[in-house]
Length: 369
Image (cartoon, rainbow, N blue to C red):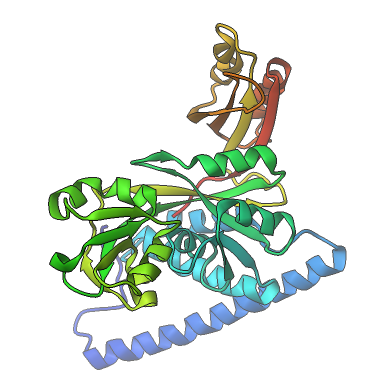
């Protein structure tokens, strides 16, 4: 990134180290004053919403707009991602003053799903681990947690079918998405040549298959409910290693025997944020649909034709057995745009006239960070 002009980096010709440190102290004081003023505004907003019986304080579309505006105005030297993380944490802390959020996630503590939850909501929320995807849905449906975070697809290994199946049975909405780069580590207590068994979630085993074949080819591979659970087992059993995150190593007192062992360097998992309320447009959105059609030639083509005719990009389609009849399928479709956008709304109206089932699972901001 190009360095800003006009001395915006805070330095000038002939400035001393002492002078620069004094300048930083002055800037820190101003930052503190402005952050405190922002927090006071957030508290005032919470009181106004309370008085008029408005919706909850967390607004996914509003936070996405704030982050996009920050990145659009960024002139460096911090990159967009670093600046976005800073503002995410400021918003998270301010929101906690208005309404402390509880977020359910696929646990236990130390999973990538927890990392995705913290990336999306910031560290001023309380994350609540659950033992399975359906339990995350249940906690949010019951109102025990405000939101939930569940994995839905990986760039290497594809869709998480259990998550898709839960949307068929649940009334919850998709209110956001998180993209998380996945870096797997091999964790253990001894040396690499002492490992006789490796625990990991089946997806992690698949994502590290080539590395395991090359370096631990004769070692037993045992599926675990989650990578964090694999790390817990590795902390208790001799001669055992786990594939998990570096954070899990700290949580369970393990050493990182090898880092970044995933076979694909761009290995990324997409997570969905689920909640009970619809999200208004943010300006850069996606919508997810659940569709079904009778099993006849050309039925799917006829179903999707309105999307093409209205100029709507379909970014993903996934089929799942409907379990209502032999060779009957449901289709999960992601499209660009919000369901309230005029051209999307017109296409959806046509789809409802053609489909045996057409359900909007959610319209939500595209992942910002």
